[in-house]
Length: 173
Image (cartoon, rainbow, N blue to C red):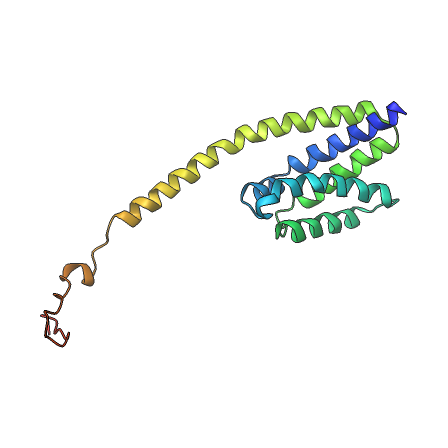
């Protein structure tokens, strides 16, 4: 019984690696699209996807894509339209197929490849985060730098003195 439990855990690790290395899901979690429990939802998706494969025999690519797209829409309010959904679902189908066939060595190799890619992807995504900070700094500089306008060249009207009705006439009229 230890071997099947270990193989179930290996499959769960591969499904987790596939989903958690998916940039769309990472962006959704990192930007709070799933609310305050976004990371928990991403972890929950691992179990739900794995259960989906166990409960349904002979799944077609389109069925898996529809299921994962529905999860992303419902849980993260995200529509996946970057073309990555078929690739992710194909990886999930291959992993489940390897697990069903008992090809645990292939499954371990898939896991190692995914974790290696995730490490590389994390290194690659760091510079855009820096450029995002730079662009927000530029935005702040632009907001702080007043642009000349008609309202900034004229002084504001003086406040009414006590006893005056509060009407002011601009000097340029």
